[in-house]
Image 1 (spheres, each protein chain N blue to C red):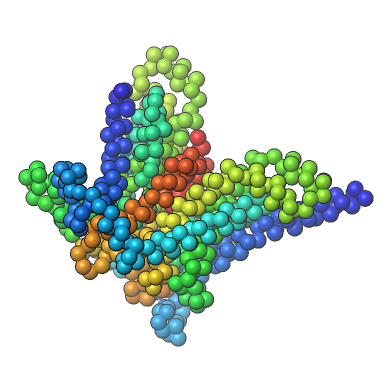
Image 2: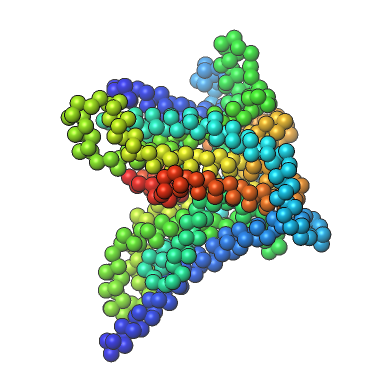
Length: 267
Length: 301
């Protein structure tokens, strides 16, 4: 093994070890943390903490909320991004530069600025503690639109023009010609949308006050602050549950995640 | 007749472009632009949602209050310490990891994945795992005890709480920035490197004279991104310390959150938010002056 590979093995170990530790504690017996290295293997394994998650702790409900919010928000994000991105790439109208400029500004801008007005707006509209309230803010995300606008600029419009001379309506062109050609771009938008929605914290924290509407990250963070001694097994089992979908997405879409990151989908 | 169809085609293609833009623009306006402007307006008001009838205009009072408040300056100082403490470490490590990754002949895919993966995780999960590592009876204190060193109250001791969060931040961000720097390295034409090697340049010299100047824009971008992200630290503080002990980990956004949602000082919180916005804008401006290019223009791999 080369010297670089040996050094990188050490780095990789440091970056993965905390997650292995998380999984180990979640499978451990009792609530105490295994601290001696020998405990790692001899401490015993059980699924008790996962079973407990399903009943009582509310964690099952949080996971369900997260699944629902992400499952609805991401397809809409994909569609809105494709439609708006396509318009921005193909359209010739004066305000185009304004749209692109505003979207880019929002990409960099600290999102916390909109927190208080959104809370007040949603309180007024009765959207606190509702699924629409948790989903809608994600649909304003500018990353997908900018990414798709760029994507369509690199896609030749010939096919669409040919379809137009054949008499296809604009919406038929969008659904039947443009969307089927958008797969690679939409995969980037989709997986990055999934990560930001699934991991979202500050807005879901503020926009929910009832326990039954919490998402997984919010539920976990508040569970960790309960007055009683911390139930590490349950907490890290919940963390593992929150991590598994991310791990699956990473395994399948790592290339798209990196591409999104390079194009500015920072969190 | 064909001319007629052509005109209609052009007209409908113009309306088509608006139609496609409409759904997203609506969401963007209602959940992005309007709240952004509303925050500016609110920052000039005294506003408590529990007593909306008492809402009234107070001009710049929220801003003068913030600039005169010790908590605000303390939060700003905490942020500054955070940036100065984490940025050099994160940058050096990320640069080294990227250099090592580019040197690999085999296994790059595996190592890249292992090192990058933490960047995709929820910050809540990362914070909870580190909370367990930093716990009184946690792994780190277990090791210290085994070495005969008395345990450290990582998150309860005002001297250790901020450094503990900073260490976690370095762990969580090295992979992310390493991938950015690696992508920058890969835009270097391979023939250039070949030529340098053929001329007998040593690896370290190639690194210093060819690669480093080439990835300079990416490095400046990393500096910018890391600084802006440090200004927005919230989850780490919320999960690990709630700003304590003795305000030692109070950050700007946590301060904003507390003011808005514990004390219901919505106008004041908006003023803090706009000061944050101003500071981030200032950093962007300085960065523009320094390297004269938009942050979105990172060379793609």
